[in-house]
Image 1 (cartoon, helix red, strand yellow):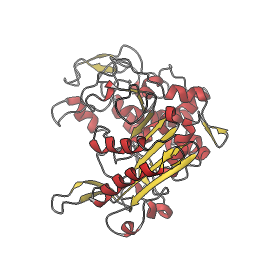
Image 2 (cartoon, one colour):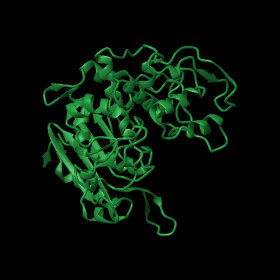
Image 3 (cartoon, helix red, strand yellow):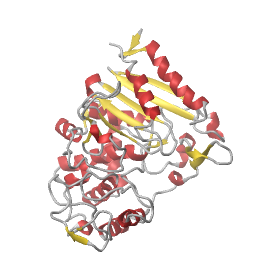
Amino acid sequence: MAAGGFSTTRLVRLRELLERHVESGFVPGVLVVLARHGEVHIEATGTLAFEGAGSQTPMATDTICRLGSMTKPIVAACAMTLVEDCTLRLDDPVDDLLPELANMTVLADPDGPLDAAVPAERPIMVRDLLTYTLGTGVVPAEPGTVPIADALDTLGAQPPDEWIRRLGALPLVHQPGERWMYDVAANVTSVLIARATGRSFGDALRERICDPLGMKDTAFTVSDASIGRLATAYERDDAASGRPAVDDGPDGRWSRPRVFESGGGGLVSTADDYLAFASTLLAGGTHHGERVLSRPSVTLMTSDHLTPAQRAVSGFWPGYFDHMGWGFGMSVHTRRTRLGPSVGSYGWPGFYGTAWYNDPAEQLTAIVLMQRAHMGNQTLPMWNDIWTTVYQAIDD
C-alpha cells in the first residue's frame, strides 16, 4: 500500500530505525517529516528530554529545536529578497555597507604568521558571501598550531558591529573567490542584511522570510510562552554516568536574547516552520499561492557555483565535495553515489543532528530533527541509514 508516494509497509523500516536511536539512549527523541505529492508523512518517536518535564512531552512537529547550520539557507533566501529589490547586487563589493572588510590583506601562507600578508587582489563581493568564497572561514587545526585558526576562534559572541570590526582586522586566509571556506560567510551576510535594511538581522529575517511563510516559531530566542516546547540539546556522553550530558536546556542560551544573531547557526525552529520554508523553495518560490522569491532566484540559490579549485578544501569532511557542490548557503548534489538524494537535490544539516534536503527529481522534502551536538556530519553511518530508509520507501 502506498500513501503520498511512499510505501506504508516500507516506512516501517524508517520508524524502527528512529526507535532504535531512542531506545539505545542516543537521543531522547527524533522526528522526520517527509512531504511528497502534496501529502506530508510524519515519524516522531521519543520525548523532548531525558529528564524533567521534557521527558513527559512527546516529540511533535511544533517541537522547537536548535537548527545549527540549517540557519544558513534561510539567511541566503533573505539576502536574495534584497537582491530582488535591488538593495543588493550580487557582483557589487560589500565595501559600502561593510567598510570593515574593505582593502583587506591576505595571508602569504595560510598556516603562517598573521603579520605576513599581501594585499587582496580584489574586493569581497556579495556573491562571495553567498557562495562562501570571501576568503575566510573555519580553519580545522589543533589549538596553537595555526595562527589564523586561533585568531578566528577568539572572535566570540560580540555585538554585530564589534564582531565585524574584529573580523576585518584579521587577514583573509585566501584571496577573495579563490577557495570555499565554511561558516564565517553566513555571519558576515547577517551583518550585511542588517545594515542594508537598517533593521536588526532578526527583524529583517522575520519581515522578509518568517512572517510571509508563517514561520511563527523561527527566531533567535525562545519566548517564555514557548519554552516548554524547546527540546533539550545534549553533548557527548558524560564520563561518569555514561549518558549524554546536557549542552543546552530550556533555561539555557536560547532562553535569553542573543548578543549576536548568528546567520551561521543561531536560529531555533520547528518541523512545521522549516517545512514551510523548504516547500516554498521546492515550489519555485511560492507559498500558498503568494510569491516570496522568484523562480530564477530559487534556481540560482540551488545551483552549484563552485569550480574544482574552489572545492579544494582540506579538513572539511574529506571526500565530501567529490559528489557535492555549493549553491547559496546550501549544498547541491552533483553525483548520485547512494540510495539517497538524487542529482540536483539541495539542502544542509545542522550541528545538533538536524538535516534538510529537497529532491526536485522525486518532488520530495525531507527534514530530520534531533538535538545531539556534533551529529550534523553527513558522513556518519547513521545518516546513510536514515536516507536509505527514506528513499527505499519511495513507491510510485
